[in-house]
Amino acid sequence: MSGRLRIGHLSTFYHTAFILIGTPWLTESGIDASWKLFPSGPDIMKAMGAGEIDLAYIGLPPAMIGIDRGLPVKCIAGGHVEGTVLVGQGNYRTIEEIGGEKATLEQLAGKTIGCPPKGSIHDIIIRDLLARHGLDVEVRNYDWADYALAALQDGEIEAAIGTPALAVGARRYAGGKIIIPPHRLWPDNPSYGIVATAETIKRDDVAAAFLRTHERASAFIRDEPLAAAKIVAQVTGIVDEDYVLECYRVSPRYCAALSQGYVASTMRFAAVLHKLGYTSRTLAEAEVFDRRLIDIVHPEPPHYGMPLSESIKTMK
Image (cartoon, rainbow, N blue to C red; front, side, top):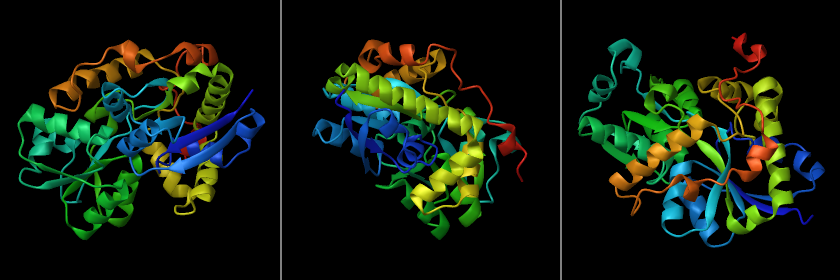
């Protein structure tokens, strides 16, 4: 098979991208992969539209916006659910302490929440949440998600929404804490999936080989989180193993399957994206997903509800 794949990815530590970059697994599967890092999902979609990449790790809302604009791409596999978390300065109370979503957000009335770029999954989740509760809170979008953490550290913003890495960084470097955890913001939200161009999907052997390796890496994170964290730390060179492990703990829900919950949660975004003006219409499921290959590669029940190995849960 002709196994060349140009793959776009984000700096999100719990994506299998870093495992696959740091192991020979793709090469062993006959795939010659080249990798390109992007600051956000919307930037990945621009690159896909320009024909620069074949396949990508991306939150589903940016992909849906691209599909609405005519890009010939579809989601061919899952990866992780519930990867969006709201963090705040240490003086804010958590949803568990207050007891309700609206009351928790009301603490931020007149304040600013930092967020990755407009059109990212985090942007859609927080804007929908604020709109539903009728709250006046500014959402400030940053080109790189890391800039939101820096702004939180500097006291420029009171809160930020983003990936588990943001939550870990906020705790470590900004005296912050999680005020609304992932499962309370948007249950089963498709924090990332594998999105491929129509031409890539036609290359059945290559796409299926990638998906098998992607699921292998997902299982590796679930079953051997310590070893996985070591690889990610080595590949990135900017965080230690403990940092990666903390990211895994925040939302430990990894699998390549397109579960019923994953798909249903994604389609909730279809209506919200249209309501908020990001898309011209409400997309249909068949426009977003092509599950033909992943159902062959992953015929067993989804693993999103499977806990991480006991080794990580017993760590201090």
